Length: 284
Ligand code: AMP
Image 1 (cartoon, rainbow, N blue to C red):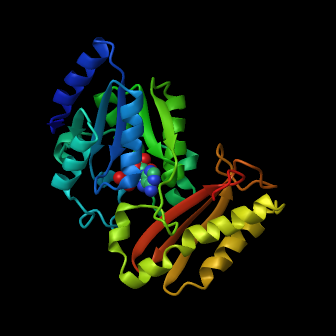
Image 2 (cartoon, rainbow, N blue to C red):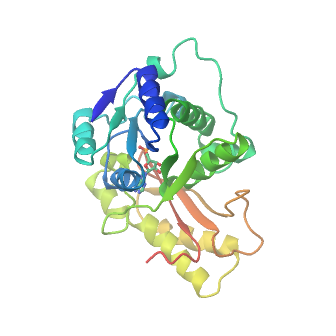
Image 3 (cartoon, rainbow, N blue to C red):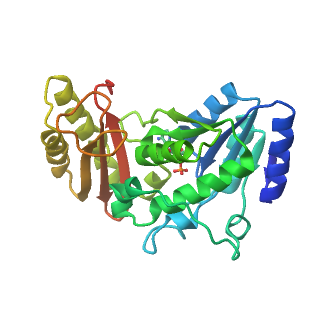
């Protein structure tokens, strides 16, 4: 595995691969890799001649009061995992290399960027999409792999691809969970032992609502309330939102339908966690 810090060296390599007819799979990450990231990399390895993984803690997508400075950065450990997964190129630029002072542009995510996560984290998706577009230009992927765990991000990257006719297939990968249901996240390391003990209620609540959907409940607000009520019992957990929405406009449907998303963001102490399920997909 070769490690690239210089964006233009990565781009040269990627263009050479493309010219040789080798398809590239890109997995963008912020590092602190876990089995969720690994599932994306494994799939990319299976489907592409070349695999590029980026590790970049993107300052543009963090708010001023968020955890950019303390976000975990176990680089050597991450590089070891990626070598074992037979990644061809690890792209690890500094902030100055990807977004030098001369960098002025940004991607406007449009109205979908202001909803849900975007409402809780103003400017978040502008930062995400700006970095994703640049990563796409540098790594020249045929396919890019994103986790269902960050569903709104996945949908907005899809929208970006459609809007700008990007020649990249956005591949959605299922959420990888701990045995007790907690979605793997780099932020889980922030949880105290007690918070960790209560964290599985997040997925349990979504699943309970999903089960209600399967047995006939179609009122989106009632499904949201069901999940909210289930989480209310957990000490130290504050629900930021529970939202049922369609995959296109991210609007609450008049009647919930299979394929709609039920998503939540909660705070356990100062740690913010998100999760979601697809209604009718059978999440057990
Ligand atoms: P991050 O490093 O948090 O930016 O995540 C990088 C990619 O991994 C994103 O596409 C995430 O959606 C995906 N990802 C994060 N956690 C999981 C998980 N538990 N299961 C599957 N994909 C995940």
